[in-house]
Image (cartoon, helix red, strand yellow):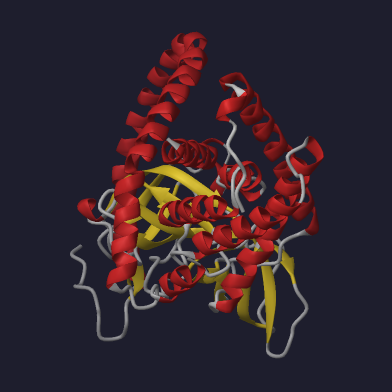
Length: 271
Length: 168
């Protein structure tokens, strides 16, 4: 039994027939159990929401009406700002690529141990999710899709010890690699020691890893380590609270705002 | 019938594991519900059944929540089933103290084995703070003792004839 499982683990690298078959068989066998768990969870969540909403309905309705009024005005203002933003981008030699296409997904379950930090989402290959796609949430980058089944996918969180994302310090532009450290804060490594880094500096994805588009929040600097050799290590507090993840976006393409290279000039703007 | 009970126990543990991940994901750092059926079968039945239950529950856990190495949890839990089954056959662990010790050991040794196998297969490891290990050990022991007490009560209600004979 032990030998068989060692072979199974070793077969992961090649994704051989035995591993795929075993995985498929276990998936088919355990799918009903997951369905039961989701039904029970749905009932529990329904009850919680019911009791919570009983008192809050009227106040929430009034608040929402005010919010709609405010947002309508905000939309009008935003339309003007968008046009202005577009003109300024052209002036600066920047280009807004197509906003990354994405699909929404709900979290099925999370596993947050020290050696493995993964979230299971309810969208899989049937919805167009593929391995190595970036997953983001309100607040910033969450992780990367590592394996996909038909109806769900496993996402390795940025805090997983095997995770890494290219990051850049927003204030100074210093680049480095953000790696997970299990339950604790993440580390940003390969930051040149002469770069200015201060506590509280915000780190965002740089886009050079080909997975995350540029500009998604990763975290804030919590500790700046002493330089070792030519670089220094920085501790980073994650921006997204993994424990409260409920809904995420899977980015179907790693596009975002990019700087234009020399030969990639935008068409001249019309006055 | 034995197979049905084992399947039911594993299914319940999996539901608990997935539910815990949904409602209290931080708790998955400290508690592994899929170790409970393993402990029950190691202490109440045989070493072989503990290994089989450990293998199946570990593979289920791998399928749902292991992003790195499929089969890792299966291997770890099979070894744990083998070890606890061997101890259970030689010592009387089926009392409160023994159940607590068994559950605590499973949760503690499980972390060490998990890290060892990951290291063996070249995975990056994160340091585990001692307080996490301490909380995990105590919680695992308490949970195992509690669940096995309930299982014992249920078995007693069903009658002494239904209490299985231990095999090694």
